[in-house]
Length: 88
Image 1 (tube, rainbow, N blue to C red):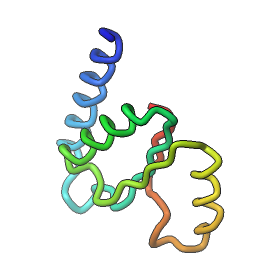
Image 2: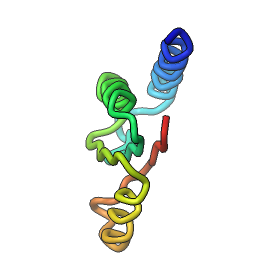
Image 3: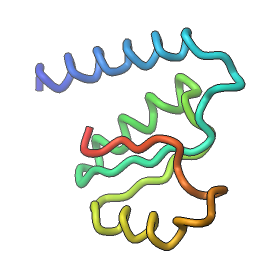
Image 4: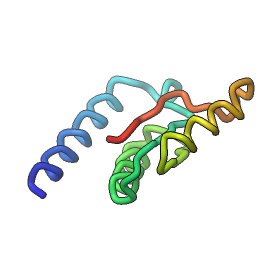
């Protein structure tokens, strides 16, 4: 829809501006995406990869599975995300 196109254009623009503000050493290693819409997950992943916002992206299609992952790995900081995007 027109609204979704506008939203993704704005979101992509913001990510690009944020990318300019940070240097390569401060980019995120791990990002978590939580969304029940596969298309939104796909588009958000493409934007993150294109703008080199994160090295690794973990996808979850439900909040419960994301919470389970976080609980199971709460002491394993090497796999925990540095930032979480929920239902973008």
